[in-house]
Length: 387
Length: 145
Image (cartoon, rainbow over all chains, first blue to last red; front, side):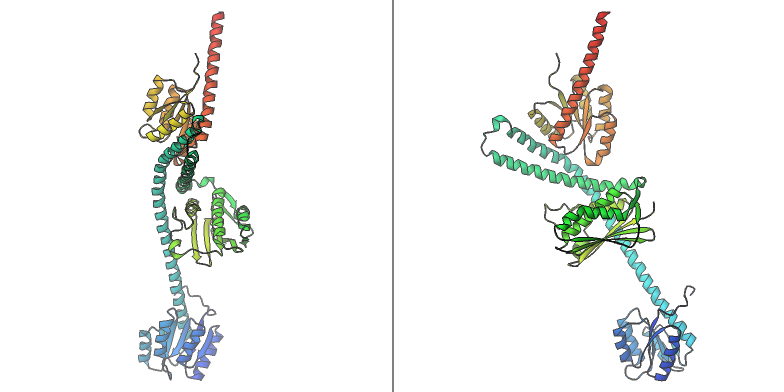
């Protein structure tokens, strides 16, 4: 293996052998190489020690009184799937080594052991662990990206459908509005002033007007959201360099009165002296306001909201974290869908996060959410830093 | 001799919408006629003098923009107010460049509509008065010769 650096410092091992002299010498020599070594003289004790603090690699004698090495190995592998075990066997005891490998050992060495050989094996085992970890991470990342793609596809399809519906609904909405308006005009005529139950007519017509306005607002937002995803995405030439710290401060100032009503404090945290992104500042501000306003609504009296700015390689992250009521598992997968809301019918249209998603996608970024019920919610916006 | 009230034409393929908006405008003492597509609008214009047209952008067949082009070609002094949906706001901008007086987003607020209608009528009236004055001046000069 080429990419094995000759570093042994980060490796933690547990050495298990009932022969005290042998174990102590090996431990001492391994420590001299910079390896963290702990010792156990019996299988049972080894299991106990692992319970207290796990290690990367266990080196264990096959033949021990009480629980023998093979049994101990089986129990270790059952409990710690990432831990690797190297078995030590008596001279010419190939049988024990083979048995160990069958039970999941990384390899075996026959006594007397050559230290160089042992160190090499430890490193190999350690690298195997690291490789598995890296693969796991890569798999998780791939899964996350795929999941985001599935979500994106679904949202685009939903948006297309919803905007079609919005277009079609606008016409009958106009008819309803004008019918009600016409009746109101008639009611205002001088010869109509004395009609019976005049107030009831007015009340009914007023309700119709109010409902039409609400429906009109929804169709507007929907059409705007779909538009930002499709047309404006194609035009990054309108992007400017936006100072994310300033923009966040502006957003916080705008929602502060709302937060003050509930005694909520909003903190801006950043280690970067300056963090900019090439983007559309107004649209990004709209998203921040939306996220902050959601957070304020979800947070209890006296709670805390944190806006954190992070810089990574070619990305800038804006994180909005609250200590609010959180979002349940069933809801979190639908949170970016148009019309999805858990608020009362007249409190929210369920368009805010859908519009935000549309904007961020249109800006070439990503928006994601993590949440735990009763602990809080974290929204992360990732934007490309470069033009 | 002069027209006292302006004539307004409402052009939209949605019959219910045309009917209701006509009723409202008539309630406000406006003189309204209706057309249900671009071609009908142009045909009517050949027969009747119209001052202001309220024109829907999204119509099957000849759309609002094409109708607007034809109106302005044949009757450049007629004022046109466009009705447009949110998704087609771009076409409103195009329409303004083609000479439309103004535009409204559908569903339009009636108050806003009547305000814009009044302004369009005023402009049309002023324009017609200027033309009449100019024509009178020409007649005067000719009579002096």
